[in-house]
Image 1 (cartoon, one colour):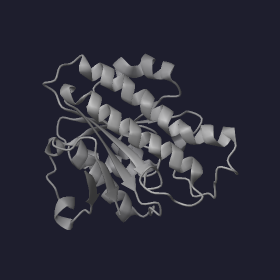
Image 2: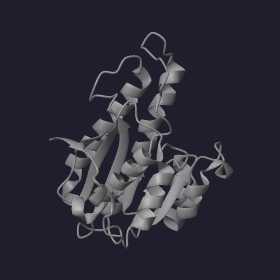
Image 3: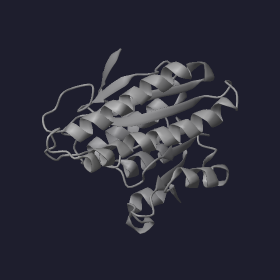
Image 4: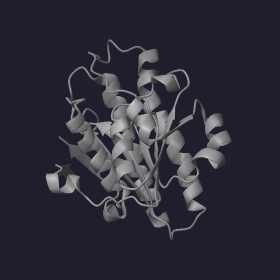
Length: 234
């Protein structure tokens, strides 16, 4: 099923208790729309955590993000293991947020191995967090409800977009990750969906709030029928 989602004014004014009692973990607090997602999820009753890499610096995190989310530095899988129990294990919703949306002019001929490796970091990070939490959640029993919301772009396996080689390869990986988790762990009450942002996705607050409201909906119990879906947000 291919879903195209447009948020109405009525949907924006959804119940404040939509995420009450849930903890949302946003990976990569420096990523696009992280602050919007933190603000909206917090306003709907969730506790919000945002991870970041120390190379980027916590002082460079958006001040709005810091108002609504607790920052946690995660630089490696070892960090994730070390801080999981004390800082992260209460999360019931994971938002895998890409570091950036490439707007460069990359083709297979102009992209070297190092540049491609950098693009694929998005997939590696999403796999790292998803694997850790799926393993944790499966030990807690299927009576609980868990959700992973991945962010990708239309430039992926969804659509060929000219000169977006690195982005297309990495985002196709995110969509594949989504499909695999949704099939393998549905019986554990773990849902996984992906939001495909338009390739010309605006960094405006309105678009960011639309992304955030959709993330909140997909993480909520209202979205339990949705699993393994690619949702295009225009």
